[in-house]
Length: 289
Image 1: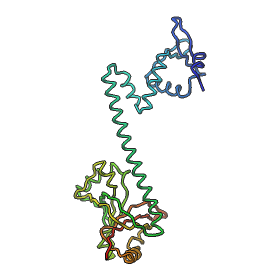
Image 2 (image 1 turned 90 degrees about the vertical axis):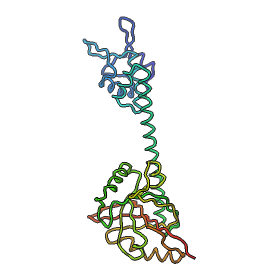
Image 3 (image 1 turned 120 degrees about the vertical axis):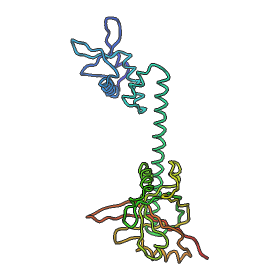
Image 4 (image 1 turned 90 degrees about the horizontal axis):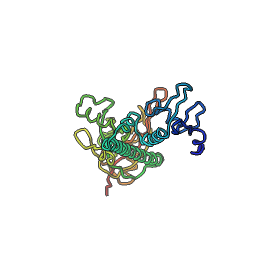
């Protein structure tokens, strides 16, 4: 570990006017974290050394070193080199204040974005844990409130709806906060009709925060009582192959289906052109006496 005493002993030289300089040679003795910052700032012209025309040595006086270390702070705060140039070329306090307030705003936005992503991961982890239990036994749960938008119906992309396309563009800006979702309506499930659609779902808590709203193409599903069940799906095995198991369970517990069955796709895989998805489904129900 280099100390200030080391620096003073090795790096200070005196010019004829009694001014102290840091000598920069091939056997550089600045701490590593200072050396990398010094090289970068020197290359970008943020600090300019005094160069000896005879020895080709470069000298940095104490003011330049202090300036370098001050810049390091702002670089760690996320300022780019170009922003640092604006920051330190500004002579008035107003410009400095404006640049700092802008950086504060950017960091707050990054913080909010990071918090939302962490919350999304937390909800996904909870769903994965539920799916592990639901793979072995059907679970009684509360389905969370959701926003949902469809993009595919019976394997056909819904590309002709202008309002849908516009809303999908909005959703694409926050794809890390949503999950792939399958859906089959109660009537088609009971009758065994293979009418499925795929779309994106977002937890209502997240959607409300980023401005997602119910409209002609975005559906809102309220929180409700549901059965949770996990299964593997492919082209030959859909939720309809799980129908008898689910209906028998519901009958045994005096339940009836009460709305669309939604899924959260936990993962998808492809092996030898064979695609498979793992679905954690919510089956809404109501009790009958």
